[in-house]
Image (cartoon, rainbow over all chains, first blue to last red; front, side, top):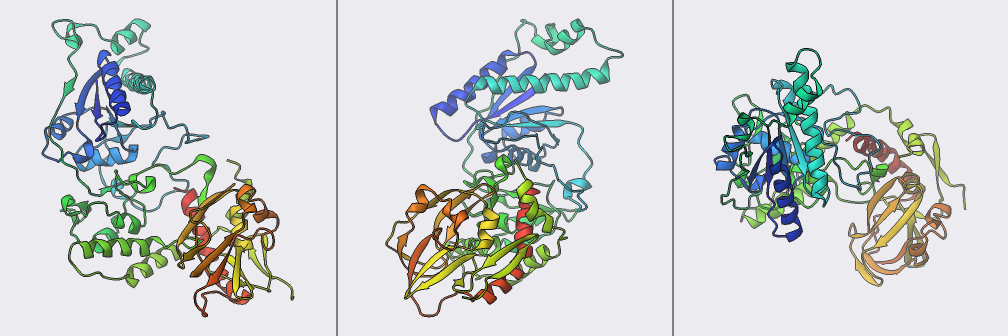
Length: 343
Length: 153
């Protein structure tokens, strides 16, 4: 039985509520899944009943939420719910991908050490599904079934010697015995955890990108970041974070900081826009650059908090340009290659 | 008018007429006795390639502040917000471009002009053609990194 967590949205939008209920109901009927409904994942605190329930899950699981896959994954991670990032094939219509690109893909060999490389690898997989991807509950149910059968195929390979017969496979995937269905022959009920979850705002670190460079902890003047016993960066005081402020996400050289509820998709953890490969030239065409923007936003927050602004930190800007200048440059072909990028 | 200056963008020779000034954000600025006409330089057009859609978020006439966001553009290879290169009074947009922005590609220094501004100050943050080429030397690397960074995300 694969646990399926459905994290409800904050919005009372009836279309969204219907979609959630449809997904919960349909998956709840299937013996393959154990459905748990919780409040909005982002607003839950570490001590909440919902988090405790999630932390009990030791095997593979599915998590539905109203956040980008990457955001959900790392949100779970910061609450001690670790796992490999599961590949979800259900994507939104306007992501016109010609090929699947899993979020952690890097086109070139990654010589940089990321925080995640220093952790022992997890042996379970978490599949994060974004409820905004489609309006059709059936699509989500189909994808959940596909994932379940993929997982059971994997497990079957490990467990059964030789090839399982059709009958064995069917019995495994749709168990009908007492152990699976309970003494009344009914599936265990869907669990709904209801608890108060006040609105929160804090950064989530994507440790598959984070290199522990400490730019964020240097930059944030509100004490949100700290280091753990292993000298690794973490979001130590999330509730110190100034509501709505995304400044630190702009200074991270690896784009490893996510604000799951920010209105800008890139800051909220959206996958790269592969559709048509539109390059954003705004920086070249006069937009204030990330370091300037971050410093401005931080100053706004300082002033609102009754403190004095720092004004732009040249040190930060210099560090950033040094960092970019140090990158390798076999890039002349790239511009010429723009013509051949027929995507 | 002397020969246009040339800057190599990889294998592409981008040309810059010497009868006008340039802005750091890759627009040209032609002095029409007091008011300045702006358009995209060859550098910008090479990066954009075929322009599909141009949109202004303000209407003429309107006061402008340097670096104010005034619109957006979508092209075959790119999209971007657009920003004012100088402060002043925006007097006119090239209306023909709204229906058909292809003049940006076919005649970037002429019919593909974008808008006109009456400057607020005498000292303008504009560059001579030679200064602009120097500026391109500096930003070429960053441009490639911006593109590479986005492609590798």
